[in-house]
Amino acid sequence: MSLLNLRRTAPDTELDVTGPARLVRSARDVRRVRVGDVAVVDLPDLDRTTAEALRSRGAVAVVNVVPTSTGRYPNLGPQVLVGAGVPLLDAVGTDLFTRVKDGDKVGLDGATLVRGEDVLAEGTLLDDELVEQMLSRGRTGMSVQLETLAANSGEYLRREHALLLEGVGVPELATSLDGREVVVVLPGPQAASELKTMKRYLKERKPVLIGVDSGADALVTAGYDPAVVVGDMSQMSDRTLRAAGEVVVTESRRHLETEERLERLQRTAVEFPGTSGSEEAALLLSDARGARVVVTVGGFGSLDEFLDSARSGGATRYLTRLRLGAKLVDARAMVGLHRPRFTLFQVLLVLFVAMVALGAALATTAVGAEWFESARDQITSTVQEIRG
Image 1 (cartoon, rainbow, N blue to C red):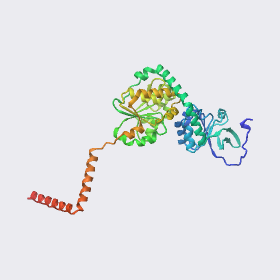
Image 2: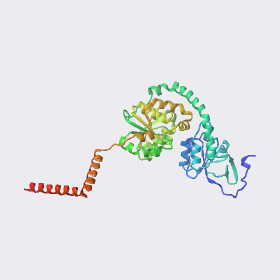
Image 3: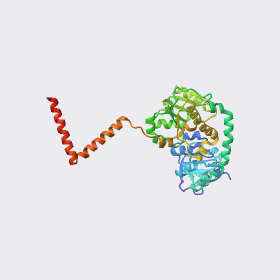
Image 4: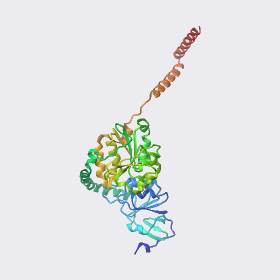
């Protein structure tokens, strides 16, 4: 029997979650989600960054038409949503997109998606135990993914060795990076919090700031103007594009919509060649233009996070990081390594406060009182001599 012909068995019972449906056919569509929406997504192997975006945009539930975890690797998206208390209904079937449209008032009745009294879809409502089972299967399948990564790395190196090894085609910038520290803000879920922890470093070292995709918005929101923005313009606000010193568009993301938007904002952009993603383009650009140190904000910190974020682009990320080598530093490591600088004024102020404290302490003793009285008499005598 078709699901369309099914009715709720207890139509008078209160639904667990309700809200307008919002169709998300790709990770780029997540920006359409609003507070209170039930996000209907088509996102196999839901990654952490996309899950964080769904949560932060206020989705009250997520319904995935495909398996949220295929077992290829331990993707972290399900853990993010379930851990945050956002109901996640898994693998309800892709035909749901033909039965629901944006704005339909839908709700969850356990593991069933309903509209009014009609049953739209049924799936598996994930909980902590099921998510842990998914992660376990993913860790088992990770060895296959690593073998695939090695094979893809060879293919990418063959195809784009001139760009990767020699920097052929990397655009020139008006902003000088030669010998300077560069901070590249990636569109990761921790970008905003990591920027806060780096506040002193950014103030003292004054590095060149580069924003990548929605990471550029994170920079502007934190109160910084990016010297350069790189990547997909559709993930950046008009405010960010206006604030940026320079705009770099990756070749794969340069299309008519991008050109029209840049023209409307009266901005020009240079193009980064090849099939690299936005993140790799920003890192290779920094390296080719002579950056001394490249600090990444919002990046991954473990093998699980690397595989979770890399997907099919794992080879380019892996080889790009090998290319930068020792000059590439994670923000979390930089915060631990950075030692604050003390200005001459701060040193003199500390000395002054110490002298005042010492004087106050001495004044409370008999010897100190005698010293102060002697010093007062000598100063008085000197003043009288000067006056004649």
